[in-house]
Length: 274
Ligand code: NAD
Image 1 (cartoon, rainbow, N blue to C red):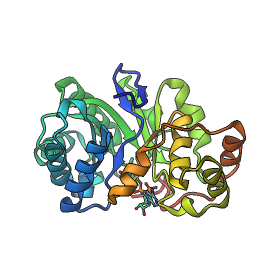
Image 2 (cartoon, rainbow, N blue to C red):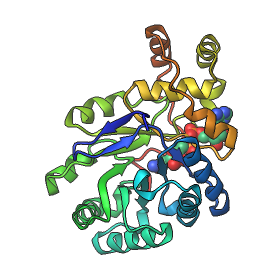
Image 3 (cartoon, rainbow, N blue to C red):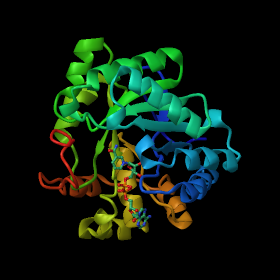
Image 4 (cartoon, helix red, strand yellow):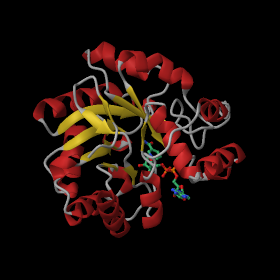
């Protein structure tokens, strides 16, 4: 398909739009994933802690789209950190997903108080060598945790999946790591839906004849980010992928960039989160 991809420093690439399936029970995930793949999505973002890897695997099989054409991400949960535990957690995820590899395996959070993210990263390096993870990355690695991974292993993650939306744009983190070739991926890209009421976004949407969700997703794409909006509603799954027929103007982008706020974070700060 012709949808945009971004290329990792390991030579692989990821479709820029994926379906996020947080807070989606197994039975609902089957239909959401299958609908998304039939719509044209080729990228699904799950995690062990979402407890829906079986549903995601079943949705992939029901869609009729070949596994090899799909980019599948899952994540190791905090209480599975540590070298041996992470290797075991990966095998358990693969079993639940019903596949023998994932395209991307992420450390879900640094969970720094455990002191295990470096050995967890060493396990991911092993899993890439074994082919169980085609690419390896991190999530919620704000601050300078990534530097510690690099110092210990010489290996940089291909991607860092962090909270990112117009009200919380992560400019400092991106300026630090994007020059090293690390792609930034936006979780809660719609601000968990809260950004959809924003007046600036609504005005831009009206001018383009698009929805607020489409304007925000388009902004992530034009920023070079990977974006994983969540919906389980078929019409919204379709709507969120229908963003390739318009472009934001320089004025639109400046207005959205102006929404960035120091206090825009939703939920906990990865530097202190357990
Ligand atoms: P989101 O920003 O994608 O917002 C999703 C919500 O917005 C939906 O539940 C729905 O209420 C609304 N919505 C979506 N499309 C819409 C549309 N077209 N019109 C109107 N309303 C619409 O929020 P999210 O689920 O928090 O984040 C997306 C994905 O990011 C998750 O599913 C998950 O895969 C990932 N994520 C990762 C982490 C992490 O720690 N790595 C944390 C949170 C989320």
